[in-house]
Length: 163
Image (cartoon, rainbow, N blue to C red; front, side, top):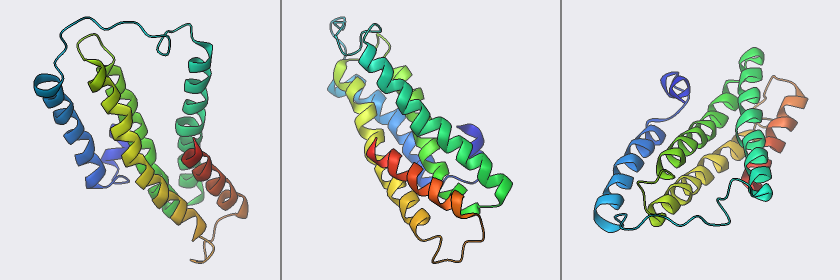
């Protein structure tokens, strides 16, 4: 997350979004939704829930590992457009995972826990739309890379938008 932000592949607005979300989550915790009782264990967040485990695994593969591999392949092939389009999604997703780890501790109330995925997924939709737009306009911009990379980038961006 820090490497992607420091490399300049992520815009200032995405970095500011993450910083803002930290302060806003703290404000929600202190003002709007303070934790008064211990949280109840739900069936959804139960670690033994196999469907949730499958969903998280598929989300990690589609949303994180494949885009990171796509970025590394883009570095080797010189696809600066594809890297710059995919990096904000990876940055926001890794920030979301970090913030969910913080929010799902026992110190936060359920509304604050819900805030993190809703807030980050809403922002990630915009980065995914930009990624899709970049991938579908590569041929128009006389992209010099392989046709297979264009196809993989499109499928990967669509899969992330659908997931």
